[in-house]
Image (cartoon, rainbow, N blue to C red; front, top):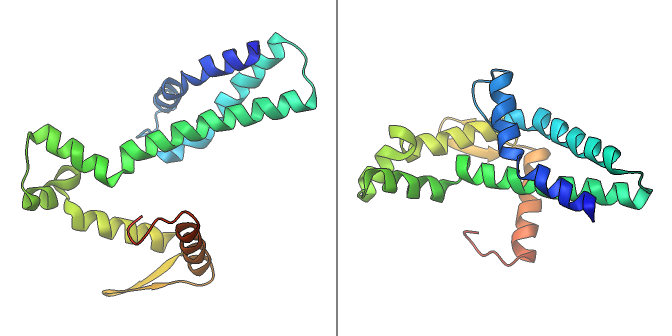
Length: 166
């Protein structure tokens, strides 16, 4: 029980580890690219704390790993929603400007880059991941990875009953 409390307390410092390590190493941003080294450092800290507290059996170590990974993915999801969450970004833009018309939201999204920029950026990201091909104005699923991920997404939507837009 003591170890669970210690790991939970260490987990409160994940954002500080992320930002602090990013600045210490002088990465240009606290992006998702910095997550792996920060996760490995966080994982090391948790196991260092476990080693200092006492000896553990294999199930204890599995529980430690599960707890560490649970907290880490929670942080990653929160970070991703703040940085890349489309709806949240719109809310922040409206809040910063007090109010915006639909046209202003479309034009001012992402510091004036606009929603069209977002769509193009995401499509180019998918292209760079080799999930789609872009030929002029035509976007097609790329095989095999794009097809597999698309089918997995459709299956998840059906299982979770997410509907058309979910």
